[in-house]
Image (cartoon, rainbow, N blue to C red):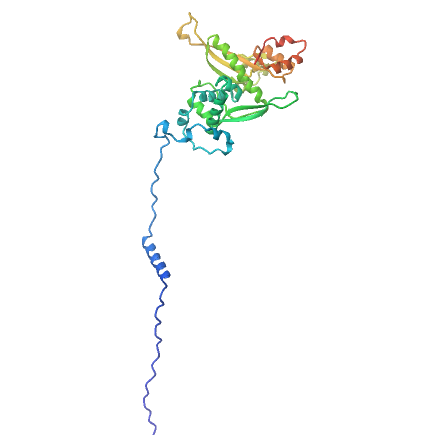
Amino acid sequence: MRLDLPHDLPSRRIPEAEPPLELSPLEQRRERLAERAAENRGPRIALPRRERSLEPDRPREARDRSLSRPRSNDMDRPLDRRPRRQSLPLEAIDLALRDEEKKVLAEVGRFRVIATRDLAETVYQNRSSRMDRDLAFLRQRGLIQTDAVNARRDGRGGRVERLEVVTLTKAGRNLVCERAGLPQDQKLYSGLVKPREVEHDTQIYRAYRKEAQCIEESGGSNLRVRLDFELKAQIQKAIYAARKADPQRAMNEIKRQVAQQFDLPFVNNGIQIPDARIDYDLARKGDQDMGQGSRSGHADIEVLTAAYHPGHLRGKAQAGFRLYASGADRATLTTKVEGEHHLLDHILEL
């Protein structure tokens, strides 16, 4: 007889849990920093930026050094290596300018380009060192630009003469328009154009100074200048309007009418345009009524150069312009018009 006795089943062995590994002090510090960063993390709110006024609150004596005059060591350094100044409102720049500097800006704006030697003579009474300091200051403020260009050769040999000239920048032109107090009909220019004609264009200013002196001595005042750029644009506009109104009219008839409208001579089927026209006011006569308004006049000036051929010179002489030429140009023209020396009788020397 077989007797089966119950046996206890062996119990499954459960592995004991491994004790947690201890972190190094460095890792524990990293975990604490990560928890702290998570607690403090939140949406970032940008703080409003404090607005700064464009107008300086300090008096003129305590203003920023950006308005100070260039020191001697600054003037010796090249222009492109000088420290850039911060931009300032036109009002602040205008207050920092001297009378001579304002005069320079106004004159250069009216004539587009003027030689520095002429500015030294007319504005600074031949004080060249003071002019150099003022031009350096205006250049640092971004109001003017100075360039050195070659003078005309006109077939002459030898060394080429270099001419230093001044023109306005756009910022300088804007400042003159708003602050110079010039007549509203006075056109202003900026930038250097036609470098080959720069010497001739600078002579226009010298001719203007001589003619303006004669006008003021005869009682003229409130002088305005219209260069040939402006006159040509006005004439072309008038011719276009006349042709559009009556396309069947002959061109010579239209030009003659436009020449009469602008009080310009019509010579050899063409309108003679001067280098510059000086408009001015005349004082009232004793018997003139106050309600009739002021009398006005104009003078047309032309600067002759050695490049003028005899036919061109004849046309300018017939036009009745006030003719000016330098001594060297006059000598060259004399050889070109042999037998017609009467053309040179009314040429004034610059």
